[in-house]
Length: 192
Image (cartoon, rainbow, N blue to C red; front, top):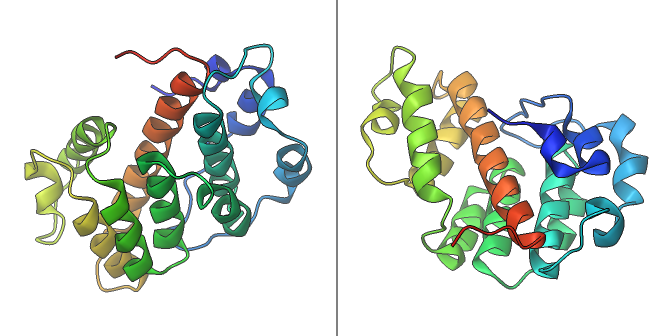
């Protein structure tokens, strides 16, 4: 269960309303733009102190993406020279949509620490519905395959698969897991 209040007043106000984003670029949320634009790491995380500036920047890239501001998210994620920055960069390109570029950034990501939890979340979400042949892997996987997910999102986005609702729910789980992982590291709450 995702609890937006755990992230402090400024971040929780941007996360309070669940956004089940489109698989493509979506429509920027004009109600969030001014609040997003005024955020910097110190303001966003207050009253907590930022311990890892790269992870704080990753959270900001994620926030812009959550509200469908892909260009702003891209500008931030491409400055983060870590596997986590590459993963946010990949997700943004998947939604752009630019599957090839998304996979390029996945190559730079490697096996990210959120992948085991994402694999389990996707398995549970997929297991709750009747699966088509192209989505069966989600319920059967033992390791997260982000490349197959890029392909499935592309197929769903272009109407070649009826998996769009499932992909959107998995995309939300992915966003939440990655944002929480970045947030905990940004403020020094990393667990191992």
